[in-house]
Image 1 (cartoon, rainbow over the protein chains, first blue to last red):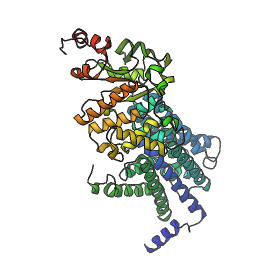
Image 2: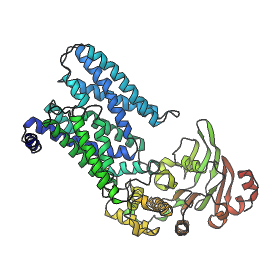
Image 3: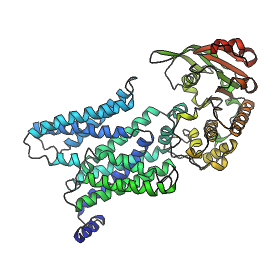
Image 4: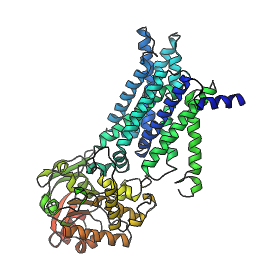
Length: 298
Length: 252
């Protein structure tokens, strides 16, 4: 046990090697961006869209793997899997948007339908992948369940770049996103492009989810978008502060989860991150300054 | 700073031009909600839209503002509403938003100015002070930093009114602003109406209480899916017109 504690200390103080350090900082940046972006998805009651997008990446990952195998390429190094995930995420997003506008479908049904269809197609393709006796499925595994250890420095850097991009977008559009989230009708009468701002929030969340695949896996990537904002809501009654707290909780969760996973060799990163986030959520629920249980106000 | 000043007279309702609705129809899933509404609003002053439940009163306001798809034409001073957005302010029904939202009263009022600073900028101190002054105008200066869910219905309605006032618009559309508010809130809202009237603005207000139309409004639009009558209250707000709108004889 002492050995693990010492190792954990080494990891969180960046003394566990260059690669681990890059991965953990990348994870922290991404968690930060996920928390901030997810706040607006939550306030607009569209958090589930990110889950559908995350599940929708599975057929893209599987198809990209099959295509790469067919062409005799190594899927991982060439960014095939992430590319496939990104394209599939975009298709899922467009499908949800298009279906949700049909009068007899509605946004929630559209989201659920795309989630189920994407996941179903993904599982079917994955069964094909498994019949291929391809030796190099390690890259695939890490996208499914997340793995800090197996992450390449290039992937970590890309995560960090995307995270910075997302944070800049949110910082610049904070007042517009807040106005649309609170009262889209009023925002439209003022002349804000509500549909485009909604699409931008959805896109930013999708970018975060796809970028989070290597570290959290496709099943749990959405947790980074959903849990930190929900936890942050307990701490403040101002949208700007909720965004900041969610970003902080997201960063700490991803950082600590990645560190735990690096130390406990058999624990995938995704579950470790989600467990840390869930712990922070529980603490927020109880002790939150604005609406935690101990505060006594609903 | 110019946008923070009081509206100059040339930006008020009579100078901006008439609000005109021509042949406006709205249907939800093939069921007509409004059909062929043609209405020329007064130049300024207080106008009530009355009619039975389901008459399409709220829908008319939303259609005028472009919030629901419609056919027909709506113009302000001959130009489309889209081109005249800054001449309009919308005060929606209180029940249309989630009051649990993490925002203070001041935050909500500031949303009325969301396009003023331009993209990528904060509101700035001058606008915060103006928002505070508007909250003071509706008697809520001391609740500026309170979370909006922790206010009474009447206070929430006044926050919405202050956000509408922040638009500094020539024409204000209000959806049932007096529904379910306490006496103090009602007095303050009506007082604001008087100021808007004196300024020369046009206030178009969906109103449910037929008993108070004559004392509070100068003009009326009696609606039941289409225009039953419109004009000065003395001429249009007659028992005959109300009977036609409500389908039963009513005394006023």
